[in-house]
Image 1 (cartoon, rainbow, N blue to C red):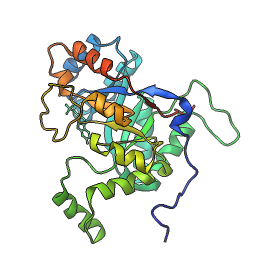
Image 2: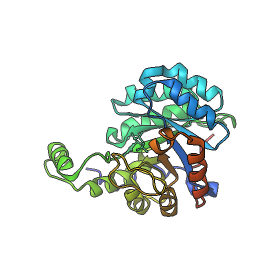
Image 3: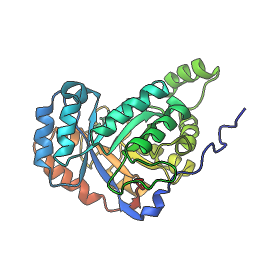
Image 4: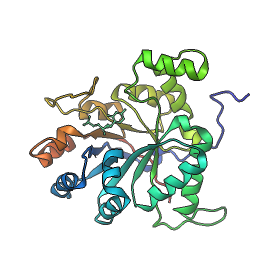
Length: 276
Ligand code: C5P
């Protein structure tokens, strides 16, 4: 049997090669319809922000709405957390990439075959990369981000799941560590993790790009986020990108909130190299 830690593939491109970059800001557009989302996006169109579209908005507005936004120049993170058999996820990822998005999520629990099928197909289809052929420098594939253990799991609930799957319980932190230490070998560019997991993830694999929700600027309401961090704290720990939703979308002045967060994000950290 193969050991969990045994590298199964060549190491993928290192983020360090692209040089130091600032932590990016991702704004979660958790709206039930597109009009409200578009209002915020248009107000802040001149700011360097990636917009996160989850299942709710995607199901309300559909792929054409997303395509229109990317055509307008908005940078989109499609957060649909794919998890299915390799062929199905691979085909879904190709559809997602065709919308012109910048990044998307899948579950690491989908395993190496699912993730490699996605990575190989995207490189082949989107970038035209084949043995012995130079890909077009214009072509870009979206970043593949892996979800490890959802932060909504508390330990007792994860005990139930890990016992049901493996016959014994596992600590959430250990499961996260094991999954993320395999993640890049399996084909992802980065992972989604809570602010309190940044250190664990970077210790397991310092080259993984981290996307970090649970961010609250000083003075903002935590809402249902149990353990939050400020943009500056997460950036200092090495977050590749932070995700902030309601403090922006529920504000009467979203542009002012975003500008304040961007001013806080001054820490140079690595960004992944997008293969062309
Ligand atoms: O409004 P708020 O800043 O809490 O939004 C955070 C966003 O990040 C939401 O879209 C939420 O679904 C997402 N997210 C999260 N925690 C995770 C994964 C995703 O809050 N572990």
